[in-house]
Length: 298
Length: 193
Image 1 (cartoon, each protein chain N blue to C red):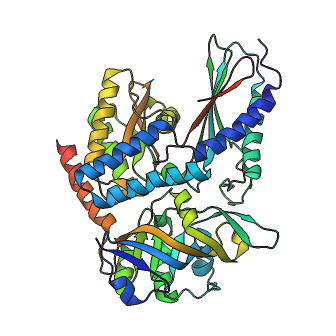
Image 2 (tube, chains in turn cyan, orange):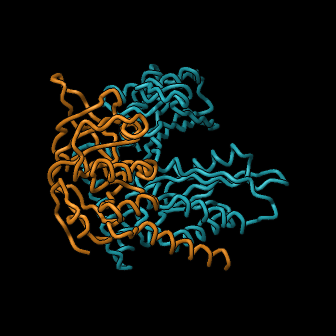
Image 3 (spheres, each protein chain N blue to C red):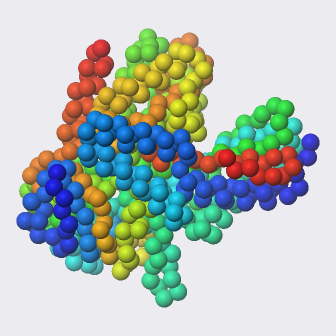
């Protein structure tokens, strides 16, 4: 079926507003995770950590009241778009609309631009460029809606990304050791308390993409339906918090608010593990464009 | 865990009096520096155009808007990861007399040693808490090296800037190092179990 009239203009406006909303309005599950962190630090008597958690929550309130950005890092824009399979949509134009939306957010709000050439380090000035925004597409059968998830991924946490092609014989123990090593090496740098995303299986690139999905697009408190995977999520969250790295790496009970694992089947002779970290702000925003053109913000 | 209010320029005695996990709030002037600022100072050998004696330097690249009169309006000012700029810290202290670095993510052992030897401290701010930080920065008073935008040398006027945590003191102590040592020990036990 045909999409609602003016869909490409709507996509551009929604992309612009999603970028700004994600930078200003922290998701409810992340707010709840941070509040639990503050309570945990108070309970354990970690005065410095409790002070940090309080500053984080105050900062979120200030951003709410003044409609300012939570963090100065406007990130690299990432969109995950779930396109209804019944829609006849020009995907090249959809991507173009998302790029224009990022550019408009950057010039109209205005936002700091972070996009540079990887060799010359020359700024584009638009938060767009070659391969930016990053657009991940999925198609949903029997649907005529477009669901847009947006995350402006910050750099402090993104620089803490890891991939290891373990041996099958390293098993689950090898996976756990590798994850703990990654958390240790990251220390204070990714702005803990963090959300730890783990990608298991697939090929190397798939594992990395799954880790990003797990850190950036999954809600805190959700569990993988596979009981073995869910058990590993819970066990790793407990172990990571036992390290005592704590908020901002200055010690405490809340190093991570969540450990999320996404997985794919893999080759008999492979055991790929990727780790991607999201900082405490857990920035993301979601909007749905219904078949009649209405935009629903969730 | 004492609480201090400081007004730069700071003396050696000011920073030697601070202990790990004390909290600090700053009134007055602080300078903003980032990767490109310090590459110019140290790798290209261009001395900073402002007197940094006793200065407090913040690791930042602010989001700003230029006004028609050439001054800058603050939009979003937050703190970036200090570890990336660790190699510049001993030079800032030894050559230019900087007394405090405000950042997030911490500094490495050579900086800890330079702070002990020369009298300097590292004050941890909450990374990502830019809404709060921007509110505590009253004005952008001066900007040098605009060609490096946004990684210029910035002079900010601040009020009640903090709370900052003394995370590396002027006596060779690092809270980051203490936390990481304990974490390494715990991970060893977890891996063995």
